[in-house]
Length: 331
Picture 1 (cartoon, rainbow, N blue to C red):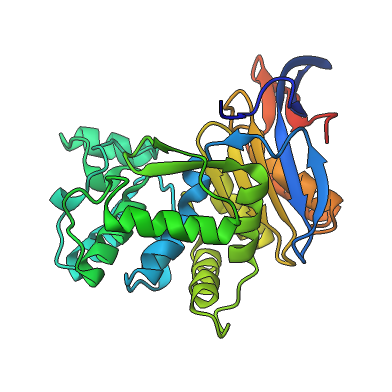
Picture 2 (cartoon, rainbow, N blue to C red):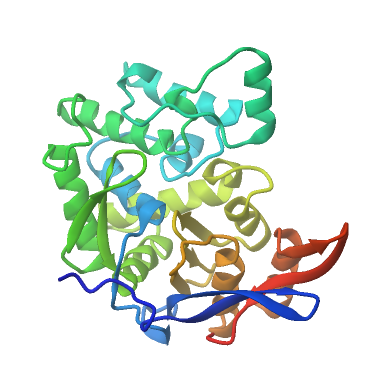
């Protein structure tokens, strides 16, 4: 039996307060690493298995680049994104494909409407339809296809776990996390997603988030270039007004949320957090991650307060603010 995260393993990470009444509680687990990679805080059981979902994308992106995909700047940043499908996002993904001699038909992710409401409304008015390039994972898929083209691997079936690309990605994931993959599932976009502990995820993200693009080691150079690209183009990683983009713009962190309440965040000084909300909620994950970094010395209280002001954390009633989403007693 796989030891997955349970209710008994979890602590209160966040609460939703309305008019002085705690209406909801989000439980889960988290781990914090120092800038040197040492464990400085554990909340709940970070050694239980979780599916990292899109928080795995930085590791997958590094693997695609080491397999031969040549991407820089916005193209490199969007390879690790869960973007909202604006015209600007779609344009960058199309450029990645075109420069590799590929088309949107080569993408194996599902067709989707943009999650950016204004873009979606414009497409509806223009009698558009869901497309693969608008799917939030299309940047990752385009990078996977470019890796296949560069290496000479077949582009057909590139999502099959036994495909050479996915075997390479799994090897890189294990190398970065220091942990053997315990189980492989299929993510919402159709790509393999590998079960691991929060401890392993934190180690992998810490290695990426603290890497230098001037390192003598190729893997570290790639990771350092990826982090720099994301920090230089925060809009790519999610979209204007969205939590990941806000956190990067405001604090200079390297951060990536995943579906079902997963979050990783690396402070500018290298302090790293990985967390999982057991109920799959994402609304509190950014502020909880930032608060954990603050308590470990990675961010200042003023920076976290500034972030909280910019995030959608208020609870309304009758058109007025009557409460807030805030970190819980378990941290």
